[in-house]
View (cartoon, rainbow, N blue to C red):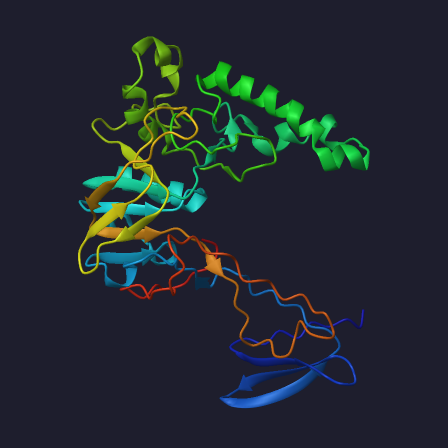
Length: 333
């Protein structure tokens, strides 16, 4: 009953530093003046989505169009009528790609490093079974010997069952209703799953157009919006993968590797192609850097866990450029 919570608003933290005798000195501002107070423990709950991660892409800093990090995207009017390049392949990139469709843009391309694995977060519509409840079953929760865990034997078997289910339900085994952008190894536990799938029918359009009608007709029931409404006519989203760069001082982007998936299942080792295209706007859906500038001398002898810097996707090891437009970071991207 004597427990009290002291909540202080409008109190910027300047420094958190370990004390030699134990605990931490926390320095914060009160009416503009620094005040230091000692605490036994400090929990940092400020989140990690605050400093945009800009990939090291040659020529990006001289791109003649507009460069936005996804945290700076606020409204579809930023995309409407433009030629847009979406960089990335996870949930944020897929969401931005779908908003490009709905804006609509003049043209939309998504560029990915190695492909993606598309699986919806819910099967059977919005009232269907969530993916998490389908994969958290008796076989996932039972005890297994450490050798089984090390060899991932269980995942090898479930991969076969999952891919067969994908094919029977959607016509392709590289993802659920995914006809383009395949990853090299479609395996359980080997890839991050992309669960934002509203844009997939628009990505599938050009890939399906290259196949004979009988190959896709049986699964045409999936060629619609998530609520069953017809797709917007005449709109598609291209997917390009691999290394790319910006031709300095222009709006032209040069794709150096596989310029476009030619089928749902391109042969391994297929020859690469070269492609150049112009864009008005780039949206970088590339995540965030983990920055805690107020932590001083942490992560050393006391062993406090400080997050490591994530790796960046780069075509060549060049310095990280500064985007032309300064993004306004927001949490939860």
